[in-house]
Image (cartoon, rainbow, N blue to C red; front, side):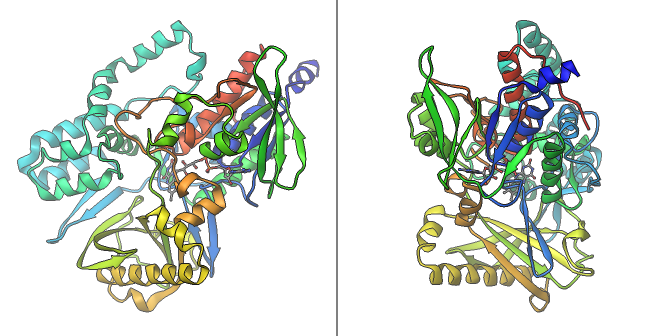
Length: 515
Ligand SMILES: Cc1cc2nc3c(=O)[nH]c(=O)nc-3n(C[C@H](O)[C@H](O)[C@H](O)COP(=O)(O)OP(=O)(O)OC[C@H]3O[C@@H](n4cnc5c(N)ncnc54)[C@H](O)[C@@H]3O)c2cc1C
C-alpha cells in the first residue's frame, strides 16, 4: 500500500539499550515506519527489569507495583500499545506495605483507602487530624490521570491550557505535598508506630517529598499499580515480542563503545550511528540512547557535547539512588502464614544483626508467597533489599576471593535476621543469591550500580531533564536517567515521546495503537 510504503521510508534509528525505555522507543519507532535496531550489551531484554534462575527458583529484580496496570489510565494505554501485559494476570493485593513494630502490632498500608483510614484511626486515634488529611489527599489523587499522550516538548499553548484545566483540581495539593517532606509530616504524628511507618516509606533522600508516598498509595487505591504474576522478565519479553512483531531488530551481546558523530553541514554535529565493542560500525540517521546517562554523555560521546546544565547532575548536583545488596533466598516452605504484601514487610531486629558492616535494627523482606510461578511447588522466594556502599563493593570486587566471602557473609547474616521473624527458616534455606552494587553495574551499565537513576527529591519531583545535548543533532536520550525518580512509567513514556518528536521533526503524523 502506498501509505505504508510512505511510512516505511522513515529514517533509520539506532537504539542503545534494550531495557524498557529502549524497547519502548523501538516499538513506537516501528509503529511509525522507522527502521529500528536495538543494540543491547546483555543477552536478554529488560535491563534492570529482569530476572534470573537459581536452583529452580526465579529471582525477580524489579516489578513490585506497575503504574498503569489497571485499565482506564493513560499509562495503561501505553502498556497496551507496547503489548507489555499480554497474557499476564495482574494482582492487586490488599496490602501494599507492612511495618511491624518493636512492641508488637503492625501498620498495614492497605490498598483500599477506607480500610487504611479505619486502620490508622484505630492505631492512632490521637492523630485523627493528619490521618484524615493524608487519606483525603490519597482519595483525591486516586482520581487523577497523568497526561501522557503528548510529549511535553510538543505541547502547544492550547495543550498546556487544557492540561492545566485537567490538573486544576490537583494543583494546590500537588504544590503543597511536593514541598512537605516525609520527615516533617511524620513529626506531626504522636503515634511512634505511624511515624516510623511513614519514615520507612521515604527513600534515602533527607528531603523525600510526601508526594512520593501519597502517589503510590493513590495508584494502589485506584487499582492501577498492581503486580503482574510471573514478574519482570515476562513483562520485558512481551515488549521485546511486540518490537520484533513490528519488524524491529535486536542485536544482543552488542555493547556500544562509541556514538559516531560527524559535522553537520548546517553547523554543529549530528549522530550518524554506533561503533560496537567488536569494532563494527552501524550507520543510522538517528541515535537514541536508552543506556546509562553518564556513560552515554561522557564515555560514548567523550564528553564533547555538554554544558553546565548537562554536567551539573553528574558533578554532585543530583544524587543517584543508592545501589542495593539484593539478597534472594529459596525457601522450602510455602510460607502461607506470612501476610501477602506486594512491596515488603519491614520487621524489627532484637538483637540487632550486623550486615555489611552496619548493626541493623530492622530489615524489610519481600515474601513472594503471592506469585507461585517463581518457585517450585510448595516453596517460596524471599528477597531482602539493603542499601549499600558502592565504593566498598567496588573495592572488594578487585579481590574475587574476598568479594565472594563478603557476599557469603551477607547471605548468612540475612538468614540470621530472618530467623528472628520466621523461626525455623534457617533449616529450609535451599538457595542464597547475593547481587551487589557491582553486579548491577556489570549487567546493566548503570552508574555506581544505581538501579533507578536519580533519587527523587522535592525539587526533582515531576521536573524534566534535558534529553538532547548541545551541538548534537539527530540524538536523544530516554529512560530513567532523564526522568528523576526513575521507574517503568517514564521508561515507556520517554521512549514514546522521542518518536513522537521525531515524527514532528519529519512532518509525519505520529501513530500508536495496541496490537
Ligand atoms: C529491585 C528493583 C525494583 C524496582 N521496582 C520497581 C517497581 O516496582 N516499579 C517501577 O515502576 N520501577 C521499579 N524499578 C525501576 C525500574 O525497573 C527502572 O527504573 C526501569 O526499568 C529503567 O529502565 P531503563 O530502560 O530506563 O533503564 P535500564 O533498565 O537500565 O536499561 C538500560 C539498558 O541499556 C543497556 N546498556 C547499557 N549500556 C550499554 C551499551 N554501552 N551498549 C549496549 N547496551 C547498553 C543495559 O544492559 C540495559 O539493558 C525497580 C528496579 C529495581 C532494580
